[in-house]
Length: 414
Ligand code: ASP
Ligand code: MG
Image (cartoon, rainbow, N blue to C red; front, side):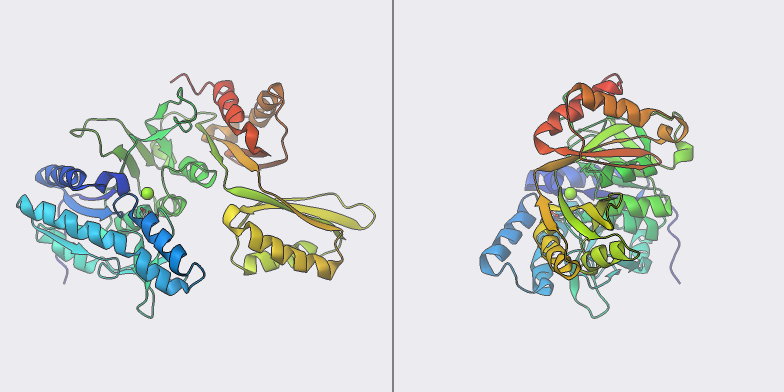
C-alpha cells in the first residue's frame, strides 16, 4: 500500500541555465527548501548544466555522427545524471532529506525511438512513497527506459516533457518550469523589445505558439499538459524570492479575458519541398507523402494546386534537419511518377499569429495579410487553424514581418 501524500504536490523543473554552475545549483536548493518549508511536496526535474548536452553532441559528431542511436542516447542522457547528483548534494548540505533518480529509476517508460522517444507510462509509486516520508525527489529530465531496458532520450528540450508527465502521473497541483525568462511574451523580446509579458494564457494557445516556433516550452510538454489539463507555470529562476512575474498556462475556462491575438510566433526551422507535374489522380497525395511519413519525417504545411491538363503540383514543408532525406525520397517518388521537377527551398521562415479570440471573430487573417502587404512581404504559403494563421515567407523578411504584425495587433500595448 502506498501511503497517501497529503500535502500539495508541485513539480518544479529547472533548465540548463538555472543549474549552470555550483552557485546556481545552491540557489535552486534554497528555492526548493523554501517551497518545502511552506508544506509542499516537491519533485524536482533537472536538465543538464547549460552547454553540457551540446558538448556531448559535439563529441558524438567527432567520433561517429552516423553511429547507432542507442549508443548516442547512452551518451546524451549523462548530462542530467550529473545535475541530479549535484542538486541532491546541495540539498543534503542544507539538511534537506532528498533522493535522486535517473529517468529509468523514476519509472519513466518510453517507446524505443531513440533520440525522440515518447513517454508511454510513468509509475509514480516509488516517488509517492518518498514524498510521504518528507523527502524531496530529484529526477533526471530528458530520459527514460524502453521495454528492453535501453536508455532513451526524449528529444532536445525534453526535460520539460519529463516534468509535465511526472506532474500528471503524480496528480500534482501544477508543473512549474523555471527558466531564464520570467514567462511567455507576445513575441520573442530579443527580436522585438516592445514585446509584452503574458500573465495567463490557455493551454491550447500555448500549444499553437509552441508548434509555431515559440521556444519557451518544448512542444511535447505542452501537448501532454493540454491532453491532461495540467497547469504549467513558467517562471524565472533568476528572480530572488518568489514574487516575480510568471506566466500561468492553464485551461481555457480559467482564463478570464479572451483576446483576438495573443502572440506572434516564428521559426526558421522549416524548409520547403515541391514536386511538379504529377498525375492528378486519386491516391497521389498518399503515394507521394506516404513514403515521407514512413521515414518518420513530419510534414507541416501542405498545398496541392488545382490540377491542369491532368497533372498537379504539391508543395509542403519539413524540418530543416529532414530536408535532404525528404528530398531524396521525393526524388525517387518523382521518378516513379515521371514528375516534371523536384525542388527545395531552404531560406524561408514561418510567422504565425495565435489567439483564442479568432474563433469568434472574422477578419483576423485579412488584417494579417494587409499588414504584410503594406511592408511588401510576399506570402508563399498560408495555413490556418481555429486559433492560428501561419504564413511562410522569405527568411530575409522575418524580422520585419514579426515587428509589423506585433504592431498591427496592438501587442506592444499591455
Ligand atoms: N539537456 C537536454 C537538452 O539540452 C534536455 C533539456 O535541457 O531539456 O536538450
Ligand atoms: Mg530547455
